[in-house]
Length: 149
Length: 149
DNA sequence: CTTTAAATAGCAATTAAATTTCCCATCCCT
DNA sequence: AGGGATGGGAAATTTAATTGCTATTTAAAG
Image (tube, rainbow over all chains, first blue to last red; front, side, top):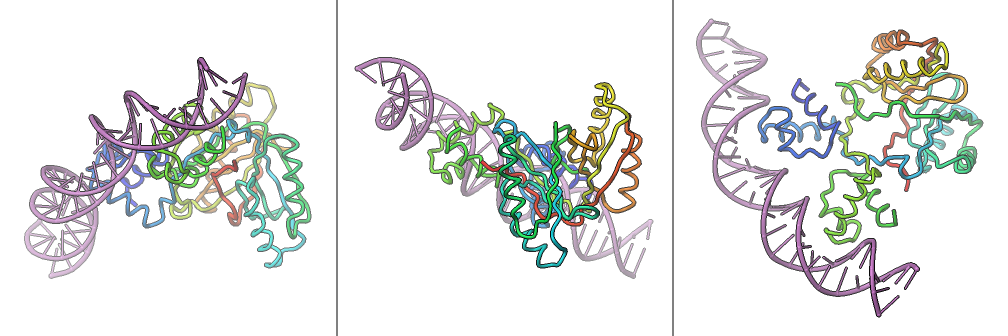
């Protein structure tokens, strides 16, 4: 990964729709060389995938809630049962196993209060869940997918 | 937004690289009709943008930390100064204004402990910052960009 | 330093594919 | 029945991906 690769990644992180031709121009490289590099980045797994981003607000899912989950215990079986189950909850956008107080931290999205109640209920009844505590986001100040290179 | 639009969004959220031809086939629609719908979704702002996702781990930024920030006060000027400044910190992937305890919750990415110390220092010295408390993610269990439709 | 080998860039031509446009048909709601 | 919205098909245009080869650069070894 040299400077050119970083340049390519930066451009594509901003706009994944650029054609190889456009990209080549932006990074000041020939088309063939540029394509070669992109392919390598894809194969190496540095480039994970290309996606389209939907505006949460525009589809009525503008509310973000952070949920701290504590489990009944920390045995491997309890954890993996919970983790398997959490994958199936579509409103969970992120789920991290945490150090400190709670066992997991989730970001979930919801339409409104009633919707949250429904999801809260789902979470509460997931296997191994002991306690869930929620904090609501009032506003998203920063929301990026571009990682600094 | 009817069922067809949702179908289109679902497909494109999974893979933003599909050509209109491929997409049309997947959602069982003619190319022209499909293109028309995508254009409308783009213009309406429901489709926000297309991006390439980099594998955090693969570039050495595999650590996620959650930082709760409390400010000196809640006057509009304090908030907006902080918010403006936080935009300039590249390691901050998400920043939400929160209800409850802390004023803001951030997700930041870092290389390692030393890197975190550096970033912590940056955050601490942002305008208006009173206190920062960090929790580390030990592992990412779920990390999605697809919102349920 | 100089030589050599490997890696990477550039160029150009080919091949293939996708976007866009236009018009007509159809469906649906009032 | 009428009008608005949406779908289908196909042609025309534009654009991009891919390839093979040569030149150049880089890095390592002598």
